[in-house]
Every structure is written in structure tokens, then in C-alpha cells.
Image 1 (cartoon, rainbow, N blue to C red):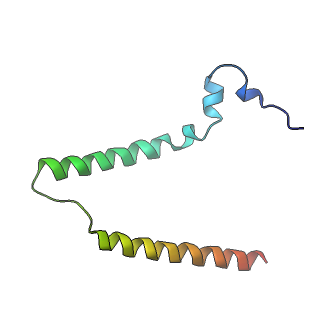
Image 2 (tube, helix red, strand yellow; image 1 turned 90 degrees about the vertical axis):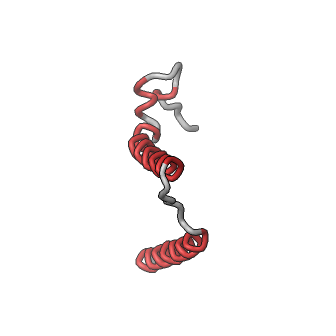
Image 3 (cartoon, rainbow, N blue to C red; image 1 turned 135 degrees about the vertical axis):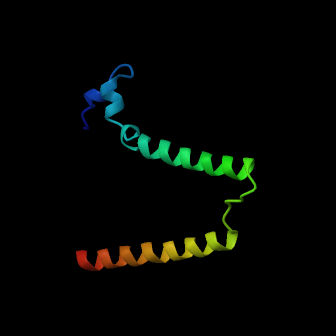
Length: 80
């Protein structure tokens, strides 16, 4: 039987918030949300277009997938 965590009993408290991942990632989420908002505002309010071509996103996604696959395979080989 798994014992209940004392952090998750009762109402929402500061200890309970600190036990979640939200406390760790909120600065990064806020930063990238601010960057995305600035890109949208610059694209809408000025004549500069900061968009990325769809083909470039496809190529970057494929390359990223290959890199992650290679890294996982090499890590597995070291583990065995």
C-alpha cells in the first residue's frame, strides 16, 4: 500500500505549490510567452514579417527527430 503524501492533504497551500513542477517551470514559460508576444506584436504593428517558412519548420523537425533518435540509441548502447 502506498502512503499518502502529507503535501497533498487538505487545501491548496504554499507547501503544496512548491511540491509541484509548476513552481520550477513558470519562469521559462513566462519568458517564452513574452518572446512570442513580442514577435507577434512586431509582426502585426510594423512592416517587418518575422514568420518562419513552413518548409524550414519541416526540415528542422526532421533533423531534431534524427538527433534525438541518435542520442537515445547511443545512450542505450552505453547502458547495455
